[in-house]
Image (cartoon, rainbow over all chains, first blue to last red; front, side, top):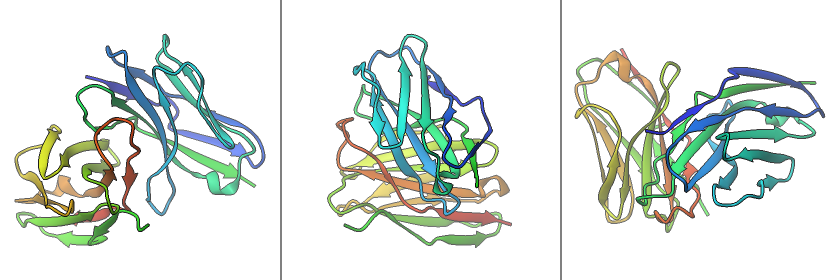
Length: 116
Length: 114
């Protein structure tokens, strides 16, 4: 079974600075998808970024980028120019590309605080 | 386009009762998945449906069940509620199960079991 580990329960960053959230995963599959979801205090889970394992290029979405290291099974999220609205729980998630299942396996999450 | 909607948003029940939660996916989406979120266990997959068929089920007791209707709306039912069932129940929808799709989450139903 696949597992996702987020080793940082809490992180804090100063507004306008850069922060990196860590995620490692364990799988025997070669094809899969990785995601970062954001859950603000309002509780609506929002997709931040996704990465296909077969793509070597790291995904980017505006101020959000990932460092995907397939061999190391590492998938970190970098947030540049942090804003107060970035404060939230961030979840790393894994989805197999086999079998057509939409099942997401989530890490425990990292609570990000942005200080003004 | 309206997002994923879940009703009710909040619910209080007592032990032994049963509860039904509803999820309406984004228009055109045919895949619906359910997750339980608790402080202790985090986010755990319950089940997923596509075209009225359950495709996958998580490791939950048989008290947890679900179904999907022809309009893709989904319900989950929890019978004989236990205190440990108190959680935020999240529903997510996507267009298909091709693996290329993004899942969109609803706001959740907060269930409190007393």
